[in-house]
Amino acid sequence: MSERAYIAIEGHAENWEEALNLCSAELMKNACIGEDFAKACVEREKQFPTGLPTAIPVAIPHAASEEVYKTAVCVLKLDEPVKFYRMDVTEEAIEVKLVFNLAVKGRDAHLDFLQKLIGFVMDEKRLKKCTELSVKDIPAYLESGIV
Image 1 (cartoon, rainbow, N blue to C red):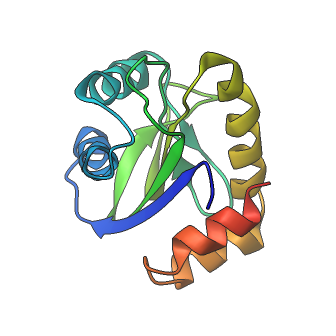
Image 2: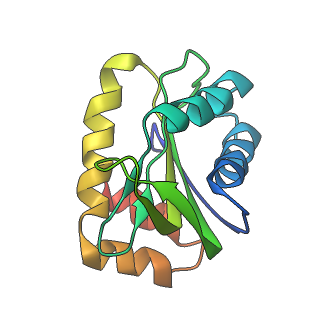
Image 3: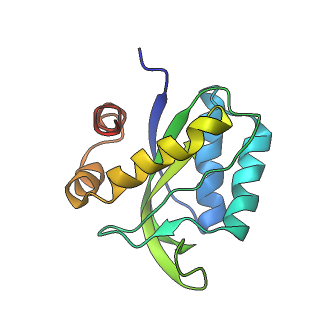
């Protein structure tokens, strides 16, 4: 059994904040995070956007919080794109259909796992596969692909 949780959901959001709330609700339901983590993600996204203009644009919201009980990634497949501001050019927005909400237990592990996840989303073939897989198949695919 993995020490990390890989979760995937589908949904609709009107904006990036709603998208984060969908992910947070699922992470809480799976006992990975507490409410403070959810709030911290929203606040961090306002200050430091996480949209990445990859081949298939994604966002990787995350935050440091004492309320991460288990390292996890919640992938949200949106039915319609949502605007997230770019990580590299913060005044520009991109249309995102995949959100990878990252919760890392322990501050020291945060950067390492974030780098692994960024490596995963930079691979166009892997991202395309995530868009094609059902949400029930994405967790196993992530677990085998993020090493």
